[in-house]
Length: 559
Image (cartoon, rainbow, N blue to C red):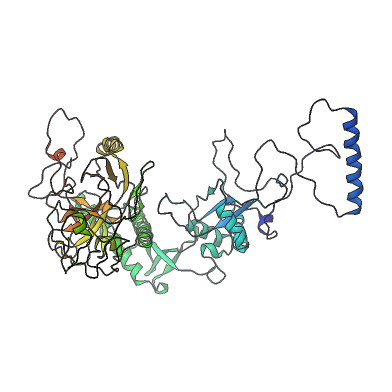
C-alpha cells in the first residue's frame, strides 16, 4: 500500500505527470522507414511548419505520446478496504493494496514520472518493495476514499498486477497514532485519535505499598506502555485474566519441579511477565479468528474458539469454506436436472422415491435409514419450500460448536456447547476435491507429518477424494476415535453425480454439552471400515500414525 504525497493531495483524476524525456526539438522518437528521399523530408518539414502555425492560433495541447518499446504505463489508484478473504482463494495479507486503474479512452498517455511508491519488480528483480512512511500510507488511504466511485470501480475491474500490503491493521493503527494521522479506512478518526483503552496488562509491581500495572494501550505501540495505579484501572475482566494467567504459569512450573517456587509479591519474574503477554496476544488472535470464522460461515450455529492448554495460535494455512472447492481440472455441476412437485414430501412420491431409496428422515428430523444408504434431499428444482422436512443437510449446522485445544496431544478438537439428540445431523465434511492420483501423492506427505485429512468419495467409484488439510470448515478439526459419536452418510442434493456425494456427519447417540465430537477416519460412506486400517502386511511400507483416542476398542493406528 503506497501513494505519493503529492498525488494523494492532487486532483480527483489521479493522473500522473508526464515523464521528462530528452528529445530533439520538433521531433519525436519512433521507428523510421528506410530510404526516405528529400521530397518526403520536405513534406515533413512543411507539415511541422503548419503544425507550429496552427499551435499559435489554437490553445496549446500536449503532444501525442511516442510509441513506447515497453508496455504502456497506466495511472495507479490506491484502494483501501477492510481485510477480507475470497471464499475461493487465499486471503490478502493486508487491508489495502495498490492496483492500476483502467486507462481512459483517447490517445495513449505520456510516460509517467517517477512516483515514490512501491515499484513493480522487473524480470530479474528479487528484492521486496520498501515500506513507505506512515504519513504516505494514511494519505494514500484518505485520497483513495475521496476518489470518485467510478474510478474505483474501473480500478477493481482492471486486469493487472497488484501489490498487497504486508502491514497488519494493528501496525497501521499504531503508525497513524504515532504520526497523529486520521484514516477512517483503518478506524482512526479525530474522535478516537487520542483515546486510550486498555488492551491487556503486561506486568505488575508494588512501590511504597501501592500496586502498579504495566498497561498496553489498544492501537498504540509498545513504546507508549505506561505504569498505572490500580485505582485508575476500570477493567475487572482483564485483571482477572492477568491473575489467572499468572496462576496457570506457576501451576505448570510447579508440576515439573519438586521444589515450590517462591513467589515475589513486589514484582513479577521476567518469565512470568513474558508468559502473560504471550497469553494475552494469543487470546486476541484467537478472538479475531473466531470473528472471521463466524463471518464466513453460512449456517445458523455459532463457532467459538478457546485454548487453555498451550500458547498455540490460529492455524496459519487454513481457509474456511462452506462447500466443496474443486481442484483445477475438476468440474462440479451443482444444478439438479429434475425436482419433485410435492405438497407434502412425507406422503407423496418425493426425490428419494425417484432415486429408488427411502426417505431418510422422520418427522423429528432424525435419520431413520441404516449406514450405507444414500440420502436424497429435495433440491433447487423442487417445488417444496425451505421448510420441507427433506431439507436437513443443506441448511447447515444448527448447533453451536467450539474449536478447542485438546490436552491429550491431539491438537485441535471440536466439542458441542449444547445437547445433541441421537441420529441428528451435526455437520458436513467439506474440503478440496482432488483426484485419487493426487490423493495418493498427498497422502504420503501427510503420513510423514502424522496428519490425516483425506476422505475418499467411494460411494460408487474411487475417482475423487476430499482433502480438508488447507480448505475446510469445522469438520477440519474433528478428531478420530475408534469409538466415535458421529456416523458418515453420503448425501445428494443438487449434484446428482454418484462419483461426487456430499459427506454428512450424524450423531450415533445423545451427545451432551461439552463433549468432544469424533468420527472414525477409516469409516466409509457405506458404513464399513476401510481395509487400509486392518492391513498389517509388511510389504505395505508407509508411516503408521499412532491413534490416541483412548477408546477401549482402539485399533492402535489411524491408518
